Image 1 (tube, rainbow, N blue to C red):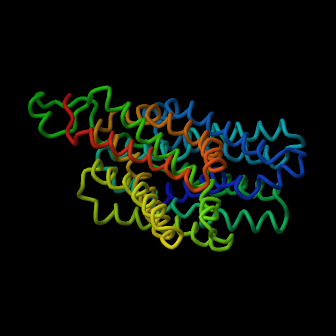
Image 2 (cartoon, one colour):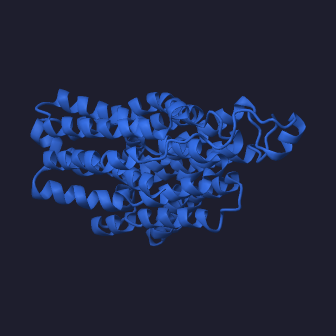
Image 3 (cartoon, helix red, strand yellow):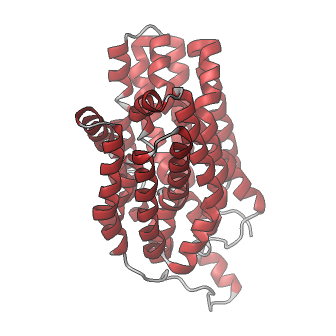
Length: 383
């Protein structure tokens, strides 16, 4: 768990959290608009959505060690391409390579690798790696900022590439190459199996429901990551106050994951997912009703809920469907959420430009719709 969690921290810090600090410098040197750099990042997220199911299937068949070791090389190649890009076209190639790496090497792939090793007992390990990788922005943003300030954005990208080769690759290559401990077929008669194991194939609508829930909540999460300081300033906060308040998201996410690891460990993941999905609408409604004075309450509720939902997207499909074919199924379920991530900065930015802080009603409605779908699901769906 420590090895995989460290590798995931490196992967997130050098991809998902990279453009927030380097997009402006990239655009200025290459003669681009900053929005064009963000467009490249959105394309990377779109590519990652397409590759998720195939990466999951590869892990189901070959294990996480081979796939994630290859992904370390892909991350290094994409970052080196960014570092050496002489023009916007090459920069886009670098983002596309990073999109391939993200589609095959972030949380969904790590969850699939753990499930292949531990089967239905992987919940604690899934929570553990999200706890470690929850510090990706805490580590990544300061390091990227220091590298870019000291040497430049190209050197920052190149340094991350080297870290993937000297740290990420050995960590992923050292993962166990075992098979899931649960057999493909249970020898017990069907009536006994039904009372002792999760249903192998719940109704097809369950998968569609989970796909919608994760797409809606990840749209909100990415929208907040891109626009939260702007929303806080729209409610009257100064720039420094907005940044300081928005910084509470990271600790709140870790606190939520610690609560899931401890207090909620005995709960069915469906219950913790419902509670986490309610957190953003509850905080947003309170903030809009009472004003800026309670904005820290909203940020903490949003962050804690987002931290728990990160775990739920790995544990909830496992609890409802079981471990067999987990990687490929997880890839399909999460594909819409990655597309939602790609669209969220642009679409929610348009909402903020038009309605200011009133755009929070959009995210609130999405959160409540996801909660309604989760309320429809049952902890033990019929076969």
